[in-house]
Image 1: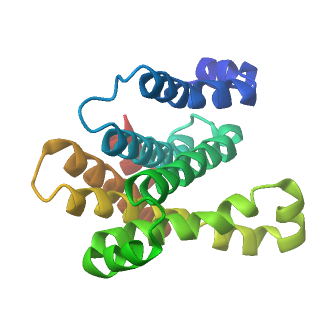
Image 2: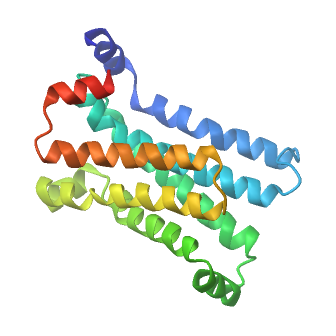
Length: 206
């Protein structure tokens, strides 16, 4: 574990940004080369939402990994902001390309399809997290208030997972796996907050 931590310390944070934006670069390429399949807008919307959820899961993994000795804390801010970037693009593609910025239709969609409201809740709570992601915001708010606010990431991840499971209107494995992973990570935090023995955490995380 010491070697992994030493290796992680040598990785500059911009590398995480560069790697995190590679899927976006690939999606742009597929878009301009008509490689997104028969329904490119839906596929683009899905891929952007999925990337946002994946980065939220990565954020939730940082603390449990630290419990077992792997410290990736310096990457958490970049991972969270990458999740927000993909969430913004997901919403923009939905509102702009899928709904054509027809606000009356968007409003009807929000009323008719409650899973969109859940997804929107997940997106909205990410906004203050992104806006307070700077060192200056931490100093201004104080560490305790900042940590309390950033627990909203739990709600964002749960909302994203539920949004996807309900959206597909079936029981395919992939959204259920993501929902299970999010539920497991949140459960670990809940148990940890109630004094889960470190030995149990190590057995769970290997």
